[in-house]
Image 1 (tube, rainbow, N blue to C red):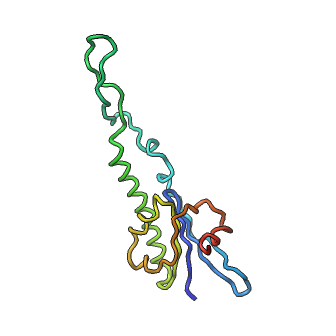
Image 2 (cartoon, rainbow, N blue to C red):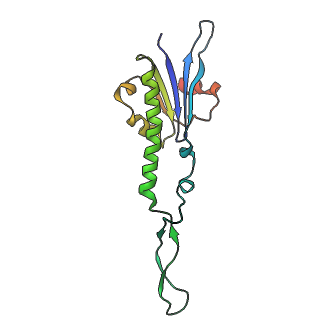
Length: 158
């Protein structure tokens, strides 16, 4: 009988469980075989990027008094969107590469189920190799990282 794994992920966590059913058990049980935390995935963007010296000047605004020159007011920490997208891409690649490493090290006939929140789900699956994706049995777009282990199987069996 081949191994079956349950993989639960989000931006900051990856949990992999082995599903086993002993002969005397009525229902299968889960044993956590790997749990990883990605600290950058749980911090807000501003916590990671707060360098005052590298700020960009804000928009031009009229000075306080009549006839006062136009002055630059406010500063932004960076041009957010491109950098935020790049950080997001790196986090997803970290999670998907760890899943890939683990499942390639497991036996070649091992199967797996996957759950992740909508913001991560498709991007992680797209980053995996076709060989690993071919062994995927069930997938769901749900954040189950903080669910108790005893309730995980009920989500996949529903």
